[in-house]
Length: 239
Image 1 (tube, rainbow, N blue to C red):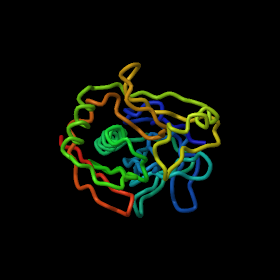
Image 2 (cartoon, rainbow, N blue to C red):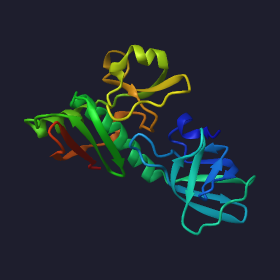
Image 3 (cartoon, one colour):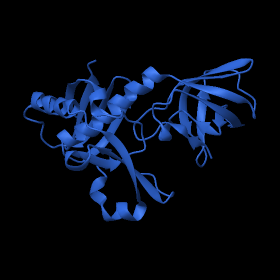
Image 4 (cartoon, one colour):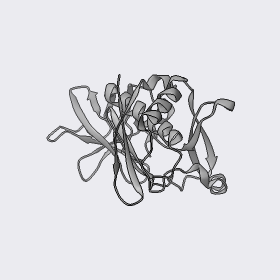
């Protein structure tokens, strides 16, 4: 089982680790991972590993068997031997961009309070698909509403509930296509805003900024009709 360092502190950029194993496909499993594994529309982290006498570029990170996190090396890279004590170095600029976009998409689901049918996060931009039979009348008004929420500089925090509590509150799940992972007995919720200022609370295992003001200004892109009922809304970071 890999300890999830990014879950404890999403702003951690360097950390030690020990190689537990290699996968059949040439990936590296550490005892503790600074790197987030691809899930929920958020891509896996990249960066590098360094150890005495060697280094390895991490091109992406994926989930392995059980609770393992697998670091995928660049093609042809030499792997650190099992048992090696090393240091992990996160590509922070890329991760921070993904965190800003991911948090902005949570707020987009507030501005457009419709069921979410899909989503994707990438560096500098992202999108949500909504069960939206009719196109919005005023895209500019939606963009202004989203940026107004961001500018409130709301705190972003987490809390945990049991799977039974989630079953009693199904409205917390906004995404129709992806359900929160089960089996551990508890579900992580990401909250935006505190007390009377709370604007969003939903299950999520991804990484987020600490305050919405850190997102910066957002611009809306195309709103595309993907099917009879679904429309895709794209956003991007402006600065």
